[in-house]
Length: 38
Image (cartoon, rainbow, N blue to C red; front, side):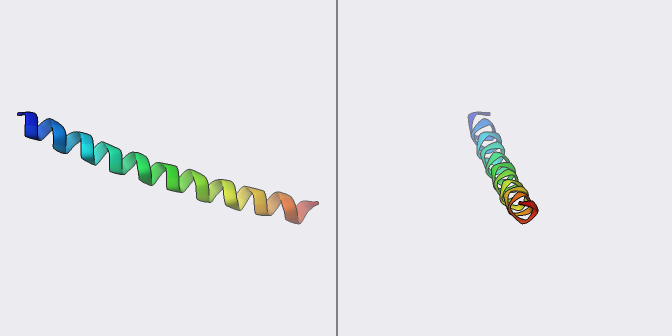
């Protein structure tokens, strides 16, 4: 049971990292668009 919890936690950590990568790439796109507007 403990092993299953550890696996769930590791999978959740991976998904959080993926979301953070998506957010950072979106921020990069937004900043580039803002620079092109100026």
